[in-house]
Amino acid sequence: MALHRTVLLSILALVCFLNLTAQDTSLEVFVHDNYTEKPLESVLVKIFRDGVVIDSAYTNINGIANLRTVTSVYEGEGLPSSITLSHNYPNPFTEDTNVEIGVLEAQTITAAVYNVLGQRVASEEFPVSAGYHTLNLSLGHLPTGVYFLRIDGIESQAVKLLKMGSGIHHSGPLFSISQIGAPDRVTVGEKAGSELTIRAEKDRYDVYESVLPMPENREVAIPLSRNNVVEFIIVDDREASISLNLQIRNHDYQTVITTPQTLTLKSGVYNVKGGVSIDRNIEIASVDTTIVLLIDQEIVHLADAVIGNGGGILTAESFTM
Image 1 (cartoon, rainbow, N blue to C red):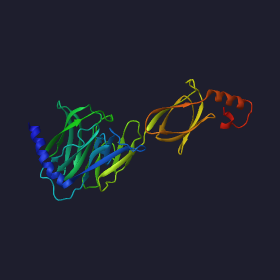
Image 2 (tube, rainbow, N blue to C red):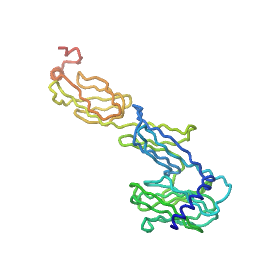
Image 3 (cartoon, rainbow, N blue to C red):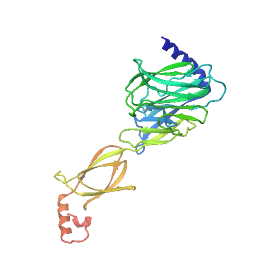
């Protein structure tokens, strides 16, 4: 019960705290296939600030993910009357999560994470000055479950954390803390970066990552490039598979294969040439596919005979039946 009362008090204090220190900004992200322009479902989109995850979400059937950014804007209008501790974001989390802490005076605080059995699984001490701070917790090594973060200084506060899935398995937890509105930063573990970035990830697609400028309309479109598995097979008029060299190329790609063979190709239009009768354009429209090319076996044998006899240049007219 004491813990519940503590959490409730922290929520009430957080209302005033956010008015002074943070501005929630919603962002609509539209993810689509860069070739077909169709919306992509189940894309994991993450926003990073200072190298740590602010929020993450999966796109829906319309290719839309709604995320939030938290822009710290400490205005110096006053200090908290007691220690304040926000809910963590994102929540639930897989690897990184953040909380905002407010303290009345300079002190050393201890950030400790406990499991539901009351066992401490991570902790770190930080010297902090009076004001507001962002604490990042990297807990990807912990198993899925419910945890509690307790901040102890001159006063104490606690908040519940919900861990989902597996993150990066570091040898231990990583903590970092920064004062909102101040240039100084105390970092424990990995050093964080300084850019606001957005990343989109989906199986079979290239990872997209870019600096995120906040647009006026709060909407961002992200194109993803698919890696398509394409099998090339050549058969004769009796449907027997034939081994033949094929040249496959487009404006920025070129290779030679011997059929049957499978390639990974970006979406687009490719020119395919082989033997004396195959010369065609093939479109790969963001889908795995099998390309079956039909060739006249009699023409193949005749071409081999002419080449073997030094018959010179072969043309399509040479094989008019």
